[in-house]
Image 1 (cartoon, rainbow, N blue to C red):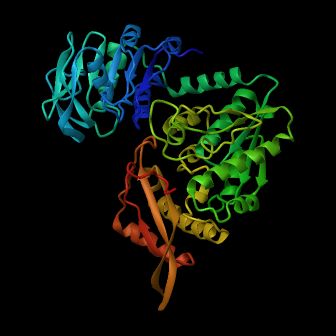
Image 2 (spheres, one colour):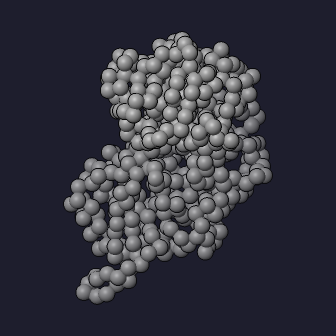
Image 3 (cartoon, rainbow, N blue to C red):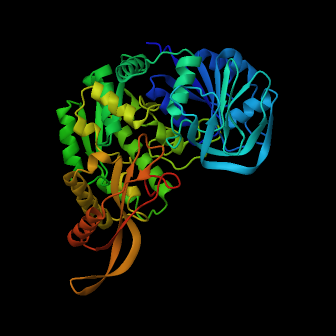
Length: 510
């Protein structure tokens, strides 16, 4: 099955380059990211109907700035430049770019003389992040909009559009309409990327990749992603060729191992469970650094999966539920973006592994995965569980891990989630959890002095996990949860709530 309508995004280092892909998929157009310096022959082989140049942290005059010849791209397909992409287009096509006296960061307003889409208002709120500005646009271009500072904010020629702001971020009003106009109007692409097409496309990709004599070991975590992967693999290859392994690593939530095992049995997966709690706790003993935790967990998972392979000699693949946000935070595969942190199933894999990887969801976002799950018939109560990190509670007990601390956190987290569901908040939230801080403080409980530990609650709203904002609870709900935790959980005498967005924070604390 071939994807007909698609756009290539050249990544010049923006941390939100993936959001461009995400927004294009919202309008039904498939898109894929490539390094800014991708070989022209490789790009031609992709057959893009349009090309987008992303933003980036550089000035076009920096020595390290990512630069390439743009005319061959324009000859290949219509081009849209965003932020740095606009400045690079202007510079390479004969215009003038200079350092701004007053840099434009954050919310701004764009005043359109001629909008790129009918739904874009004449005065548009946008998100900007740049230090250079366009002083003179190239010949054969027309000026469409200016910023509050009077600098060119949108220009176009016959085959090239460019905007100085970021239409892909949620802070920009009507940004999706601009991307839609580029993809559907200028590029003349069709909106065909939907959940039914994606599911069928992935099933065909799996069947083409895994030979008839090969089997797959599928790593199950209890989360949405691995459940969808297991169901996809099983539907594509049959249960006799997909061996699902669910490991009790001692880092799961309260009662999770038994509850999730029951769900997998209902889905009729070929399931094998492994109790490895003692092995994981021993491997993590006295380890405080979060990166080291993730890598140790990743290596031990692989050891266990390789041990399981001895039971099935035809296994040649390891299936994982890796998603796009995992990849961008773990490994800088494209452009010049900065690694944020390693995920155990991406950055934590050993260099030498006896299994090949199959990651059907690697280029997808969480909401796309849920849509595919619905297409495959997975119950909504499973698909709409909050995300849970692969390293589990290891990255929610900050600092060194002990079984006592894990049990304490399990109880606090269980209370928080229980109250979220009973109050109706759970479905309004992208992800919520409790974390145990390595902080003790003085308290008073039962008329006596205590020196207990601190639980921090985290609840965020998001669409794709790339950006997030904290959820605003009614004060009486937080008071109720705090009282429940300090009353029911031994050794906890203080509860705090995290009110930090992403960025500057990540969703997890470690």
